Image 1 (cartoon, rainbow, N blue to C red):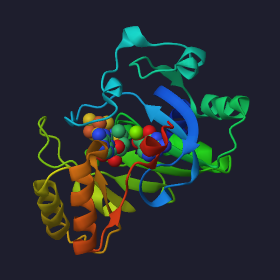
Image 2 (cartoon, protein in one colour):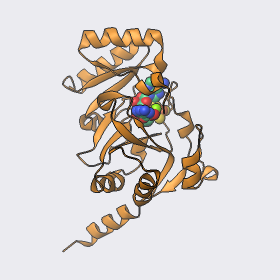
Image 3 (cartoon, rainbow, N blue to C red):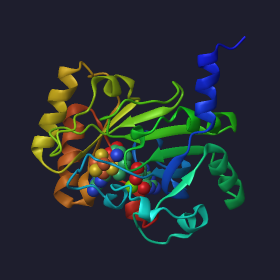
Image 4 (tube, rainbow, N blue to C red):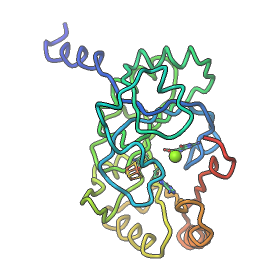
Length: 237
Ligand SMILES: C[S@@+](CC[C@H](N)C(=O)[O-])C[C@H]1O[C@@H](n2cnc3c(N)ncnc32)[C@H](O)[C@@H]1O
Ligand SMILES: Nc1nc2[nH]cc(C(=O)O)c2c(=O)[nH]1
Ligand code: SF4
Ligand SMILES: [Mg+2]
């Protein structure tokens, strides 16, 4: 017999909705799953404020910018408009769009502002594998089988800091770099949390030549891997 609190938890989860900036099908362009056909679900809202963020249009969650799922899907440029969808509505949207990818990447914005259990569980039940792209500044609320990519934010202007629990949960650590100090910050973080055995990727910030050269040299020196945002080189989403 289900306890009352379990029933309440299930009901709450079933009733969960997500604020979604965009949904699209493409090739995963970053990290361990680079090259994998994927459906991206980009959630709205992020308070972290990375100066080099390539998705600044997802930072706000303005109630006046709420739009319909159809209008959200029809967007052809980066805007801060968002739509509210339940996991069931997202699955129906995937079917209606005829998406064939079986891997779903939940990104943002900062997806870990949300409880991702209901979404990931519904996706798993429907046969999808799931991945989260997160800054690690909020608790990761997702099933064990979800692949978690943590892009640790260190010394952020707003004071947000990567959580030890998020680093421990990470299946891979992906660090955007442009300067030598970013390499040193990552080395200090890995030794502070004893994470030398984690899978680590360096990702040059915004395809800059110097950042890419630094990332290549640092990957070789530290036996890390390179992630180059393949989608940007290909000119796809
Ligand atoms: C836009 S963020 C959204 C998910 C989450 N907020 C985070 O930071 O991981 C997705 C990934 O893009 C990376 N990223 C953002 N802007 C970038 C840029 N200009 N160059 C390289 N990587 C970037 C982030 O570090 C993160 O790994
Ligand atoms: N193709 C593609 N791969 C990605 N990997 C992580 C992305 C993100 O914005 O989180 C991203 C993205 O926006 N597009
Ligand atoms: S945490 Fe992610 S979405 Fe937020 S500002 Fe930084 S890169 Fe952008
Ligand atoms: Mg991106």
